[in-house]
Image 1 (cartoon, helix red, strand yellow):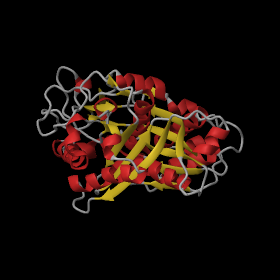
Image 2 (cartoon, rainbow, N blue to C red):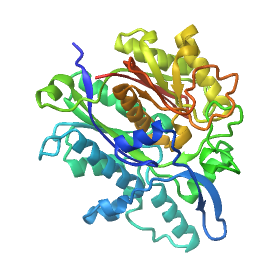
Image 3 (cartoon, one colour):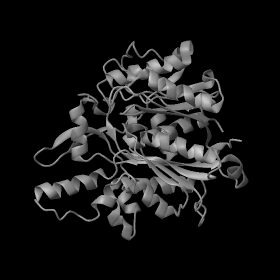
Image 4 (spheres, helix red, strand yellow):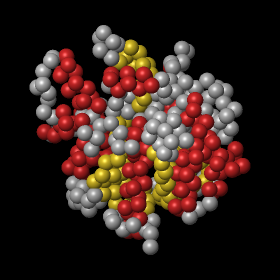
Length: 409
């Protein structure tokens, strides 16, 4: 028989700062963490909209392994520790049998760029010997395992923008099916280095800066939307088998009741509404609840012209006529797109929405696109004391889709 899985801890180190309570409060108030930042070398410097994490994680990481850690691993180390502390699992050996499921799309982007600059700029093959362990996408997983003494299954998912949602879902399945009793799940990403930003710019998917208010440049579902803003950070959840969590008196923030995945099998970069609908539909089916029980959807919505419309079509395909009354919002309008860590951060915000009954807004809406004809929760956020089930969507380049369904504790 399947076991129930609950969330007992959350740790976030993201563009709005550190700690889920202040971060969620800022997002619910519609505060943006996006700003114009100078990026690039002296010859190629430019102002770019970015959502940087303001936490000095380098000062939080000590010991000899620090020289082996790219920023992506430092962010993960701090957020992972915070999640474990929030769950009350600070004792020695408490995580020895736990699992570790981490999403990371790129890995140590700063280390990879530094190695390339040394090779090309200095014309030398004497690259820093730590470049490979710092740059691999599984580095955050490895460092978390060492830091926290986790000896159970440790898996890294590199599935573009769905990476950490899939990590959360797969960790929940491992507990549900009895493989483990608890897991640390989430994701980390730090690709605001020059080359990564320039590569995203060349795709034409990044938002144009609003001349009057740069912080309001990302406008999902808006008729004048121009794209997303790159962000960085890490978000982690502690998942536990419900009876085990209750037995130790753990705080329960929410229950994860459904997980759906699908593959578009259509395009490397273009979204497919039908494929997305399959993942969305699968989550409540997995939970054994009717779609109409869901009161809020944290949308993947990246503020691209094609992507937002495809997601609305997918939502309408699943929820039918009720889609027009279903609360839907995109918090990327405020914290940017954290790529591999996006799903974990948005899952954490969705958990807080269902726990507190406070639904965050889609910030910066000026004129809703008629093609996005759902309730996109304009600023400010709202309160729904009856909210019991909430869904978090993640869709990725390559066509990998994931949906996570949470229930009020």
